[in-house]
Each structure stands twice: as structure tokens, then as C-alpha cells.
Length: 89
Image (cartoon, rainbow, N blue to C red; front, side, top):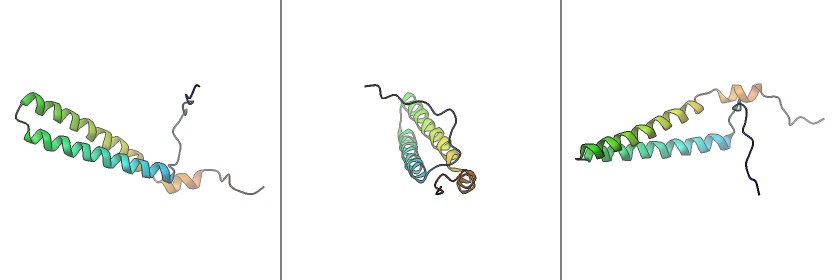
């Protein structure tokens, strides 16, 4: 059974409540991972291990910042600009 989905040609103009909650969870996961790698890097004595931990921490920090940009929109304005498809005929 083929379960591939067609790609969305452009991102949605508004974010649903479910999407926002998922993004907030993902932000928490990325922040926690960044903090753990930062802590471990501070306590590493081997320079190669310290560099690898710093690199991993930077990656999670970058993911956090990228996710954060998706939450920095005026979602109420975006939602109000969408056509209301729930109107009765």
C-alpha cells in the first residue's frame, strides 16, 4: 500500500491550534536538548568531545530558532483573512 502524501505547494497562511501546540512541544524538546548538550560540553575535558557536544547543541539551538519563527506571526489576522467555509448555504 502506497502511503505517500502529496507535498503542499506552499505553507498555510494560518496555523491551527493543534499545529501551535505541536510547535510549542517541539520548542520545548529542542530547548531541553540544547541545554543538555551545553551542560555536557561545559563539563567535558576532551576537546574533541567538547567540540562535538557544542556542535550538537548549536544544531538544536538553530532548530529552536527556526521553529520560533513559525510562531511569530499574527495568527488571528491570518485566520480572519481566510474565507469562511463554514457558512450555511
